[in-house]
Image (cartoon, rainbow, N blue to C red; front, side, top):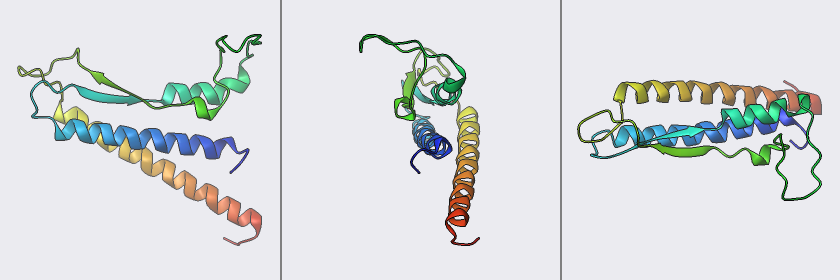
Length: 134
């Protein structure tokens, strides 16, 4: 919904969690591939920065090339995927630990489910406010 920051945060969080689920699934699928470097997806810090932005005093930008000290919109939050190649887990240079990846997959799935439930509650509140009933 336009103008509702919670709606945008839920959308960005679901987008980031979906990308993390995909990366973790790829890691598990390639756990026996020699020289495979596992992938990580991070976005929570960026999302927190946007949420906390109203509490921070933004610097005045006098030139479009200047950097801002706060992220001003949710559009600037982009889940970042990176390969972690400096950690070596096995002798064949594969760094995927199946137990760690399975735990990450379960955590990401639970967070995704929680955000989906929050989205469902938000839609229910809008329906009730519009007059569509419970």
